[in-house]
Figure (cartoon, helix red, strand yellow):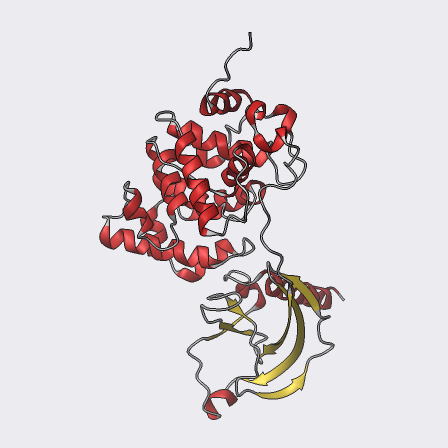
Length: 351
């Protein structure tokens, strides 16, 4: 006689005790603040990438009040390289709002959490489950993958009907207790076993009744996002220096590529060029999710006072040495360019 299969949650929890991840930095002292920051960083970013960023972020911004009172530029500097910079701006705005409306703490009610900048339904529930050990249904990318395969839920997860089916399955399978461990366990299962490519079905604790495995369709699910061609975008930047060998940086508008970050300017901004400082840096290509950026650069010495004379506003400009510029929140390719300028300066000194 065949033994009955244990409940879905029981099998995942048993697997996690022996095979899950127990030493991630945000698992130790699971305060609401630490859980929240980790959940935001982990959106569309792998754990291996997040760990060092998380540790550095916590060292500088150990609590919500410190983050709320910090300058946005410093927050963005600590985020530089993680991408999706709206996450960092929302994190800072959320901290400031909590300082004003929630006495400097994250609320423990999911609906209040969802009302804050950058916190969606799954993130709000993850904070409640992980930090407060209360039942709350989560549906991040890893969980979607596990459920789409186990429950044979077809269709792109961005569609409302598919989202509804996934949330219903997540709610039905989430246990009434062990909220903290279960949410971590199912996320770990998706990240380490039920992987996007080459899932390790042999070691999966719920493989007995996984519909995709039984039908040989694990490679088809979850249904991928409809393909979008990468858009080629050409961006030309000016490396403008003054007589003090400082660089001109300008803050980009919050909408668009690299919103809110400091960057090399894309126009002369009214400055009069006094000398070409070529050779210009080699062009480079930088890939974003839906764009292929082709970056080119022009290196000039300018008259620092000429822009004001030409009527240009300097409200979003700053002159900094390359070394100090690297302390700001910069797009990754611009950071690479300024680092190369620093290296070239050292080479000139050595020779």
